[in-house]
Image 1 (spheres, rainbow, N blue to C red):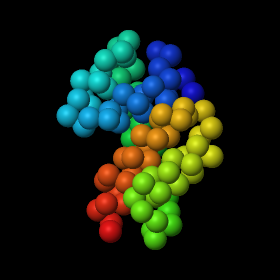
Image 2: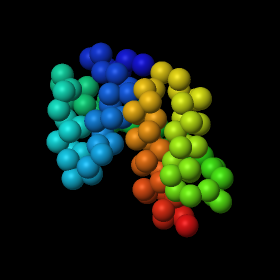
Image 3: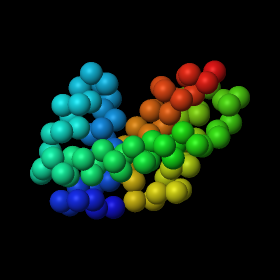
Image 4: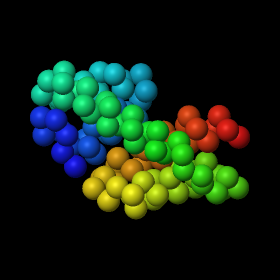
Length: 102
């Protein structure tokens, strides 16, 4: 899915949900053609994160299983997302939602 200035939604997810949270801000700004494109990417990623927070996974599973389940649900809902983007959404869920709720 293309956003403002041709930014790809999967690319935006990967940039904003960096593997290293300390580098997330720098990584998220890199590669965007403009501040407007960066803002559009940020809004789209936040919408996806809000959607992940409403998923009710099988809470009896270990965290990595919950993350995989969330990634699969988001893949079903948004088949345009790359596997890396889905993985990062699942990792975000386990880091901030599932871990806090347990």
